[in-house]
Image (tube, rainbow, N blue to C red; front, side, top):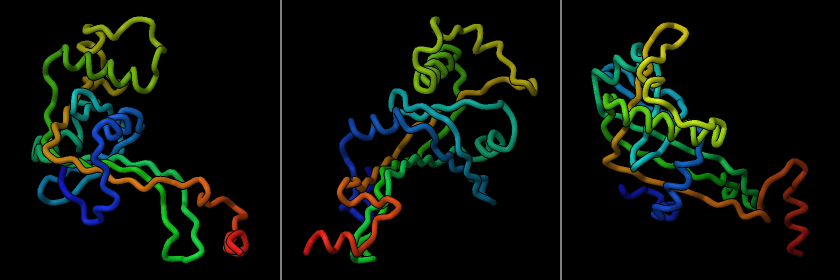
Length: 185
């Protein structure tokens, strides 16, 4: 893992990071074609130490991936605001993961199917009584007629940060600094 500037918030527990990536719903893919950055929020799965997602087999995203296989991916969740009588100590509780690496289109039909199954298991667990068929993955067309492309991001660096939310400091509407400071008197 790459060291973070604010080292106090660095998370290194790989099980915690894996669990976070397994449950987080949306990540942001960062691309660049050398002229302009492009960031796209998307559904994904963390499977076998890689990020997988799917989408149309053409368009701006695919053009940028073809132009530059170096990408970044960011996932974060906000857990609430931490109230504090000292304004500079008011903070946000969160967890985030940032990775960079290379992206490639998955061409092996079985890996495509298995990655798509991992996404279905994440977003609609138990919904389908049968696993995704290889034939479905190979033959599916979107409403616009495009094939489904599956992409894999292989990270070469990954960092995680977090700031837990102490329940006793959670901000809620109606909470005031006067009430908090009276409690200490």
